[in-house]
Each structure stands twice: as C-alpha cells, then as structure tokens.
Length: 96
Image 1: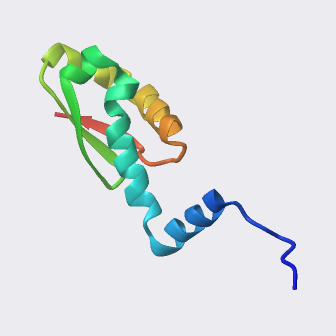
Image 2: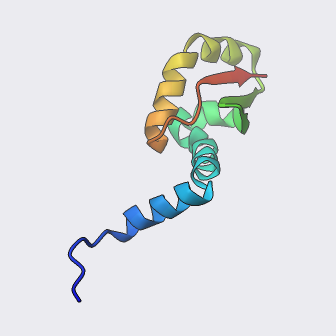
C-alpha cells in the first residue's frame, strides 16, 4: 500500500495547531515578541507590547510625544505587525 498524497511536516503542524485551538495564542505570542524587531531599537527602548485582548494589542509607552506619534500611525503599525506574523492577529493598538 503506497501513500500518494504526502504532506509536509509544516503543513501537518499548522493543521494540528488549528485543530487544537493553539494557532491564535501562538500567533499572539509571536506578534508580541516581534514588537521590538518591527519598531526598531530606539522605539522599543521606550515602549513594550504587553498583551493582546479581543484582537487589540496593548502597548506601554514611557514618552508622551512618542505615544502621540504612534497613535497617528496606528493602522500602518497594525498592518506591519500582522504582515510580520503572517496572519490577521490584531485589528487595533491601544497605547497607554
């Protein structure tokens, strides 16, 4: 008996994660970890991605002018972060 439709290990792992409900938490963790890489060292030193709740990323910012600047480019950041992860993880960012 020969199997004709072989699947890659990566495909099988993604299917398993989706089936077990682990894909979303894993993508959320990857997005939070990617904050410093996407934002760069200067902005990352003054901000930190805290958590994601209901597709909203909560970010702590230590500088009021930086908070204002980030709020103006919020939708571009959402797009950039989602593209970095490769999935639609967040729809908004809340800076505090």
